[in-house]
Length: 189
Image (cartoon, rainbow, N blue to C red; front, side, top):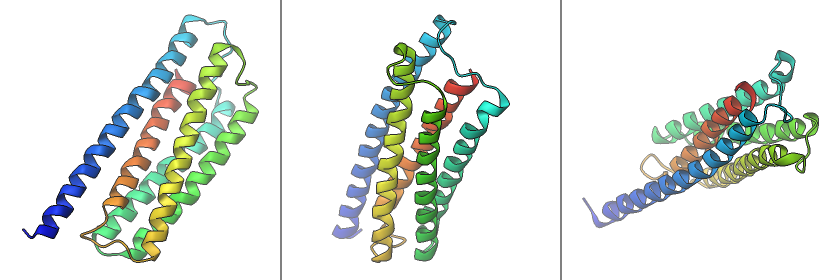
């Protein structure tokens, strides 16, 4: 193994370890907020609750579908660059970026249509904190996707050199997984 290959492998290991540590801390953060929400909701049945009627679930289900498809798109893009397809990577990143923005738009619509305000009891505050921080994470992911898309167009990635794409994909899939847990906790329990 050459010195360059050894240095690349070391940088990739550091990037992976750093991302795993960041995602672990984010898991504690979101887990704490979701747990607080669920404890308050289950402990205080009289508090304002989101009723999971079929009509009420249309927007959250559509939004969830958009985010899941975006995670699939970015994953396929990452696999494409591993095979040497810059075009496949660009298509996956662009699709995920657009779908991420659609998701945030859906979140804004959800905020405005649910009848709660951030100051409504602790329940509403936790709900909005949870939803707001997730939306901020999605926006951070959109920025990462955008940076990787620009770098793709500049030819920065190859099958042997695309750790930034892999880390962006990990983050995006993680944000999607967090949303799936939130969807269950906020709308189905």
